[in-house]
Image (cartoon, helix red, strand yellow):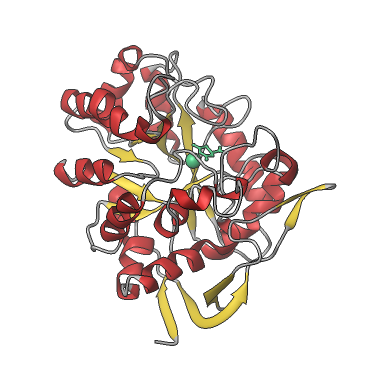
Length: 346
Ligand code: DOR
Ligand code: ZN
């Protein structure tokens, strides 16, 4: 196959940041995806409908002229979120999920939830109204090995939550383990997962290949090869519970290449192409469209897109660096590496 035309995809998990970084990264996502679920972990977090409305407008202002892109907004769940805010979120029409960060689990998660018991009334309202809960599925207990935090979260937190709120729509974001895949497969159609390109393409050896590789560091951290294989099998299975969510998470170079580097892979500048690489390697390019363009829209109850994009088999190099802040660029994931599928210019 030399060309692959698919329904224009959506990104069901992206970090667009704010200010100059927002302006730098939005065009990359908007070029590839018709819509994206935008993470609310700004500082301060996007915790109210009013904050989400203002952030949505800042994103729209950063979309290049002539490009159509719809940001799908989320609220940041805190111990103090009220059921009334959920009502307002649903009434807004532009909020499509509520993000659960266990407090301290990752970048800007300090304001996250300290105890799920504090959110029971909110979960009940979301279950009733059909608003999805988007879960960063890792425990924060420092005693738990960092490679086990997802599996432990599923056992201790997520399984009881789904049992208590059986109708709640839940997305296990950026699933990274075979335990996560098995959990999602075993639950009802209201439980789904997003999968990132980095977790499909790399295992944890990539963190240490020839030296410490900060641009391969994200949370949840890369896992063993057996887990990557389970993710690849899930993504290419055609199962509608699994869909594209890049978790593109830009941090400027100086904060990635540092003594204590930030977590996050900036995948947006090659997002669809990276997935194509992973699907092609698995001999499953024919399954890319369902994963990238149909399953997420169906889960969120949104119409499928009608436009198309085309990937052509043509080697190209991911740029070494892209504009970020004036003296601090963004280093994209796979910088300088060659990919075999390129997005055809519109
Ligand atoms: O690697 C990550 N980066 N994981 C997250 O959960 C957050 C994200 C970020 O915002 O940088
Ligand atoms: Zn994320």
